[in-house]
Amino acid sequence: MKSIVVLISGRGSNMTAIAQALRDERWSARIACVIADRPAAAGLDRASEYGAATEVVDFRAFDTRAAFEDALASAIDRHAPDLVVLAGFMRILGDGFVERYTDRMLNIHPSLLPAFPGLHTHRRALEAGVAVHGATVHLVGRELDMGPIVAQAALAVRPDDDEERLASRVLALEHRLYPMAVRWFVEGRLLLEGERVVLREPRPGETRCLWAG
Ligand code: GAR
Image 1 (cartoon, protein in one colour):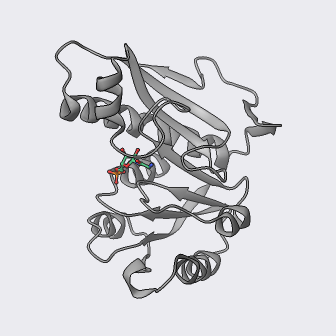
Image 2 (image 1 turned 60 degrees about the horizontal axis):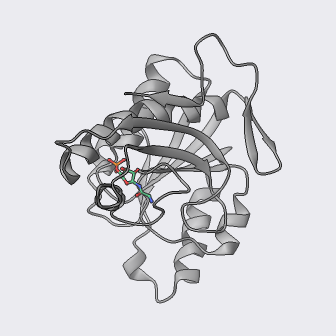
Image 3 (image 1 turned 90 degrees about the vertical axis):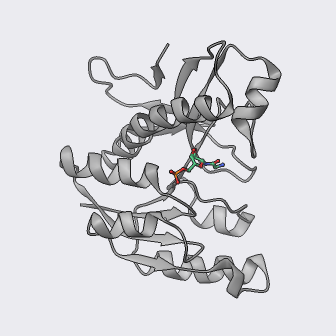
């Protein structure tokens, strides 16, 4: 049974999608703890509804990023997780923290990386006039929103998409993409070859690219 710690900052809808899939599909895994960097994170209540333990490591209580990350790492390591899942965790992580969880920390980002790392991805995608947009799950590397790509979900941008509509269409895709990628990790089916991720023994219909059209 694999142990997962999920880090959130806000509503936690990706965390909920993962918890629901884990339950429905009976993965050999458990969410040992959901940790938020702020007490007001709405996702904490959702985590409790799924029976997950919750903790807050409030970033405002620390003078430096290093002190915050030390406390966060201690909270995570108490659960000895096989996997750390960043699900809307909106903090820039230092090299030491990233290295501590090398090859066992996943992130989801609302763009087709390497395009649009950082914030306001949907607005920037619309401004750039892209025809295709989406979301990416990747292993966390040292650079912000970068690292080996596990899977991507893409959609065609519609003429009537505004920032809000595009965000909600992408989020619906994220809720399919992230559980799929976490499940592959839990099943030990993600192989890292250099900087590239390979899905071992893909089953019929399984693909690292979800296309919503
Ligand atoms: C998601 O759209 C996720 O991709 C994004 O934050 C949102 C969290 O929503 N993450 C990032 O921008 C990370 N760079 P959620 O709390 O409802 O899962």
